[in-house]
Image 1 (spheres, rainbow, N blue to C red):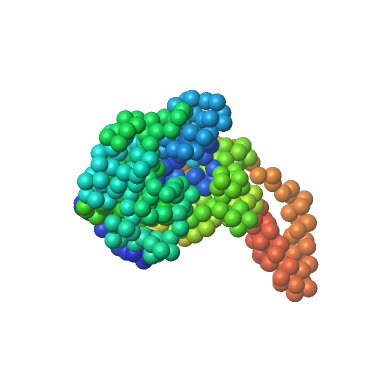
Image 2 (image 1 turned 90 degrees about the vertical axis):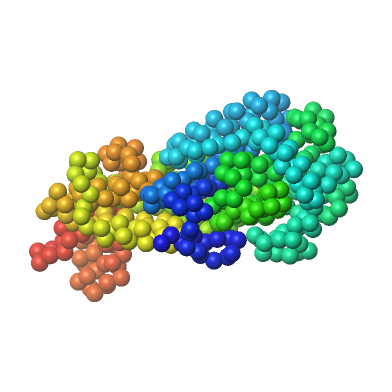
Amino acid sequence: MLNIYNTLTRKKEIFKPIHENKVSIYVCGMTVYDYCHVGHARVMVVFDVVVRYLRFLGFEVTYVRNITDIDDKIIQRAIENKEDINQLTARFIEALNEDAANLNIIPPDIEPRATKYIDKIIIMVQQLLDNGYAYVTTNNDVCYAINKFADYGKLSGKQVEDLRAGERVDVDKSKQHPLDFVLWKAAKIDEPHWQSPWGSGRPGWHIECSAMSTDCLGKHFDIHGGGMDLQFPHHENEIAQSEGATKEPFVNVWMHNGFVRINNEKMSKSLGNFFTVREVLKQYHPEVLRYFILTSQYRSPSNYSDQELDAAKQALTRLYTALRGLDIENLPISDDKTYQQRFQAAMDDDFNTPEALAVLFDLSREINKARSNDLTKAAKLGNQLWHLGKILGLLQIEAESFLQATIIEQISSAEIENMITERLLARKNRDWATADRIRSELKEQNIVLEDNSEGTTWRRL
């Protein structure tokens, strides 16, 4: 039974789709005014794995991830670059698609763009006016009146008086309440605009997602996802807009992934402490970055550093080494379902990818043991490793190709022999801590020690 932590109820719940065997999921995508950074990569990888696993379980999944291509930051960047907005967004949409492909992200089934939804956004704003949830200000903006929506704050769990305006919420004297947010912005000089019943203007940020998600998936759908920073105000406002317009429940399960941190601060463009995906991929194979992202449970913060990526590279190399030289394509999967059952148990527990990865390493060790006396068994286990890796979007490259592309400087045979001699001396002196440390250091270099009556032998994995 798949259990998912629901931000709305603040607990793990057994997942039950609205329609049997069908899942509808919407994830807030990128605002295309710059290259994707590692925080964006985490959103893409996390929900790519969610979709992959749901499909593995047999669900028919409709996955929607939007593109925000009209926004204050986009307008400002175009002005700074002296660049046409459409050229700017087209350039970064192309870059987004390249980054996603490099990270082995399955394209969403539907990828709506805000500028293609202006008519439907206007219709939803009018519904909110008709239903008494919105009003036209003295400067011809249309604003949402949060005091009209009794459940405002139910996602963030805060009272209205405790909430503060978010980064993208305009506050001005024409509003009835400081936290009222803009649904439709009156046109400003030299900004993109469209005609509406309230005069020319453009949509506010929040209304875009409400219009796109309900049009693509219906008024009521299964899962809505995004980064934790979107919980308030963006997702809170989506609920208020969508339920105020449709008068129906909006989303059953809300999922939010944790931040990527650098020096205990969230990685973000606004803080200037970010690394773009492109910068990282100049130094590391794309699958290494993907693996690094999956080493943290999706709701937990993830700490980015070269050391963490180096560790991911070493770990992924061990998995690929287990597959090296095995004819995994022409044999059936092992009849032993123990590893698959353990893998599913981990993933059923709110997509616990660190635990799922631990299962892959146990399986790789079993493969290495089988190599010496039963290559057929090793190949069958390798086939199972390959299939389980596929659910995480890993291990899909030919093993030799990956290993050649990510060559790790190997410790020399002479260095190994010297370390073994040092270890034997430590064991003779009952210095077990030193002996264990040397074994661990060699293990990190994929060197296995085998003690026997005649001494110690070693082999590379």
